[in-house]
Length: 289
Ligand code: KIV
Image (tube, rainbow, N blue to C red; front, side):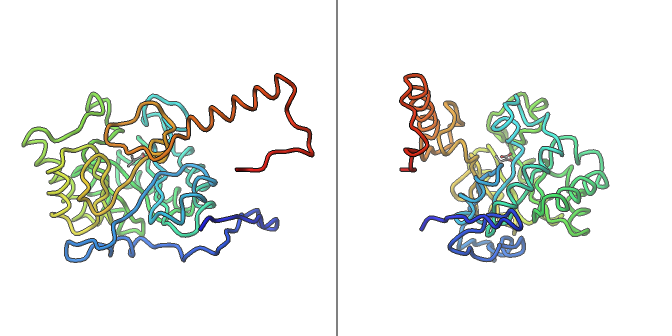
């Protein structure tokens, strides 16, 4: 069933019909995995805007305001230049546009690595200004102390191991990680350290499949794969990638639609009508298909 929205002019909030389910909590997501088994896989997609969140919300358990917005929304070359201000603005929009999924906001590069105190200041700002339920940060063992610090102070943390795009300048690119035994053992150790520190879930990105399976078996919290393994406890994709917004996407992305073609065709039709003066008068406006 499709959801429609009515604007409440008193609050400027668009209220969905039918009324959505209650918003999922972080403990509910964490408890999806019991005794190593996740009967109901965790569904996560990225969202950066209120309207996108409205459309994805009913289908997802988690909406991730990923720092991938640097490339997807701002045309930046990587996620490194993304700022806390950007994450706060887009996080607030996604929370306003969602009612059911728990919203997780990425901590951008430079906003948390220096110390647990720096991380607490950034994360608490994101929670206060956006209303999100949790933050995500990249890195393994080196971030375990920070994860424990935040969790003990009321901030749920999602970990992110394997290919960590904020470290692109150290990694030298976006290739799959864990091809040597030593690197594979390090990534599994990173995930264990984050889990022991209290992470409620861990994204595993861009690793060879046996590593994702080993982590999923080793940690009690849900693992969420992206270019990792179908055997993770859940999956995440960048929404614009799976909608076919870009010509080039990572090899592991399944493309479910061709939104780039739809937009380009609509713009071409509009441009043609303006140029040949067949653009309709106000009495003949388009109805959505
Ligand atoms: O920034 C992002 O979108 C992410 C996902 C790809 C996991 O971190």
